[in-house]
Image 1 (cartoon, one colour):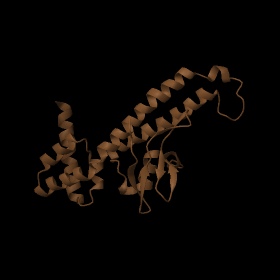
Image 2 (cartoon, helix red, strand yellow):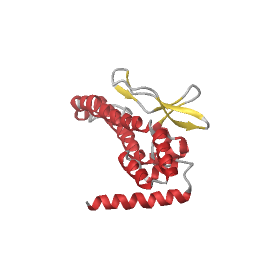
Image 3 (cartoon, one colour):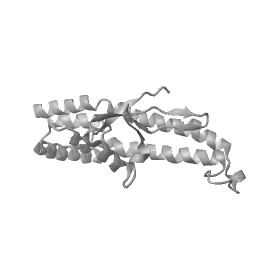
Length: 199
């Protein structure tokens, strides 16, 4: 797959981009690099004293390009990538690289390294970019929600939300939406969801 650098949000009024995955030095995946011309850091570095979900929100605030309804899955995929990357490195080297591991020969598993690096991790990238691509439309979707709201058509608005997998958590990104409108849409949305579950 040909992935591109994408804007993920703003930090300190600077645009922050996520770099595409790269197969580095012929043996490991490079991914999770954030930054711009002035800075360079990693998604994993956001997760110091909190979970990744809260870290993304704290770091990017309401400029984050990923909707809250997608954020837990986005974080799950990133965390899985980091763990699998490390697993592949240990299974490939036969240890954690502190010293020669006496269990090296039973740790090494070239077939599993191949499976992780060639099948699993690329699938994780695909799912991450599906979320990114879906969220590229957020501004357009939120404008449509506002137009339904201004028309006073809550039924159309909620049907549109359900059709586009937008939850009430995501409405927090729409600054033009009043608290009263939010509360009304929230109630209407959850009534509709609960009624659909009964069918």
